[in-house]
Length: 236
Image (cartoon, rainbow, N blue to C red):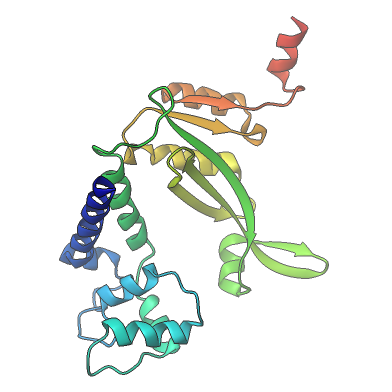
C-alpha cells in the first residue's frame, strides 16, 4: 500500500510540474494572446477543473470549485465564462498529461504482464455526437428514422491486465477500425515494452497482418471461417 501511494504521489507531482511549466501553457493554448492575463479562470485552474469528474450540474460544480480553489475576490464563475475559457485550450493538453501518466506507470513499476507481454485489446465503435453543422462537416452523419445525427468512429487501445487506456482515437463516421488501429500502433512507443495485440474478426485483412509483422508486433486475431486463407488451410 505504501508503495502504491508513493507511485501515485510521484505521478501527481509530475503532472503538477507539467501543468506549471511555461512550455506546456504555450503549447496548449489556441492563440498566443490567450492565458496571458490574470483571469477568473486561469490556465491551471481550467485544467484542474476539467480533470474533475462532474457529478452535478456544470454551474454547481463551478461554484463548488471556486469556493475551494478560487481566489478570494472571485465569488463565482458562470457557465458562459467557463465555456469561453475552454475554447481557448487545445485538446492536446490532455493527451500530453496522459502521456506523463503512461510514462511513469510503465517505468520501474510492478505492472502486470502475460509471459513478458503487455496484453492490449483494440476495438472500435460508432457514437452519436451533439447536433451542429461543424460536427456534421467534420465527422459525417447517419440517418436514423428520418433523423439526421452527427456520428463518429472511436477506437481504444486498452491494457487488459492493468486496466489502463494506452491510446484513443476519433475519426469520421465512414473511417475504418483498421485505420484507427494503425494510429494506435504509431503510439505504442509510449509504453516502450513488448506487446501482444488482440483484435476481433472485423480487423482481419492480409495487408494489416503483414503490416503488424513488419513492425515486429505480436498479435492474435479472430477470423471468419470463410476468410480465404483459412478456407484454403482447412481444405488442405
